[in-house]
Image (cartoon, rainbow, N blue to C red; front, side, top):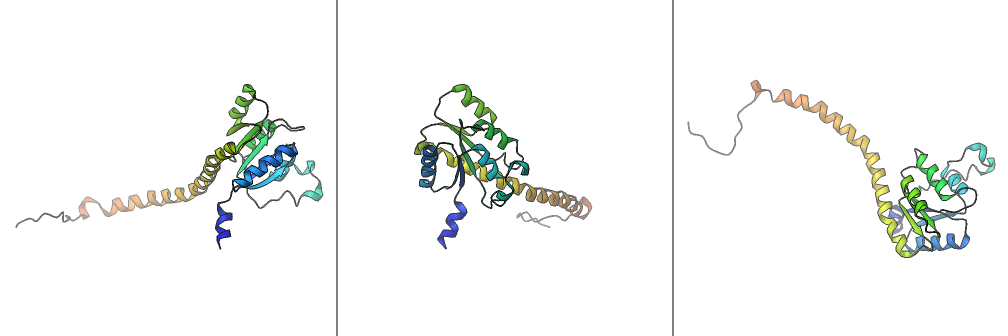
Length: 194
């Protein structure tokens, strides 16, 4: 019974790094913080996992792998990778209407201010210098919570819009019921003598 509650609150992080050592390190740090982790070794594989690649670019036999039931709550990616950089991956995610709200964190072993600024301007939540440490992973929770809150607010917008429509319809009816010629004097707690 407790495991059902734990899985509901567990966040899923997609970790992307071409270095097996760095990938295993970030995976271990995330799991230590009770995150569920999927690790891939390239930006292309991350896009494939997220379902953002065109069918032409993927192997027809791998289509079953592209359909994941597990929602990704955060993506943490290396900046320097062959083929597709972390910056390119960030841009693809932020251009996607279905994935743009997923928080993205960039990691790099190089402290290049212009690179850091470019990533932050493009929508990255954080930029961590490698080696990533537990204190860095601890900074992820607010972004995950905000991402969940944004999603629930988005889902609740329709509900709130429905309430607003009902209230707008109800208001003229209430005003009609309280028209001046139909009102009664109300008892206000003070006694009046006749």
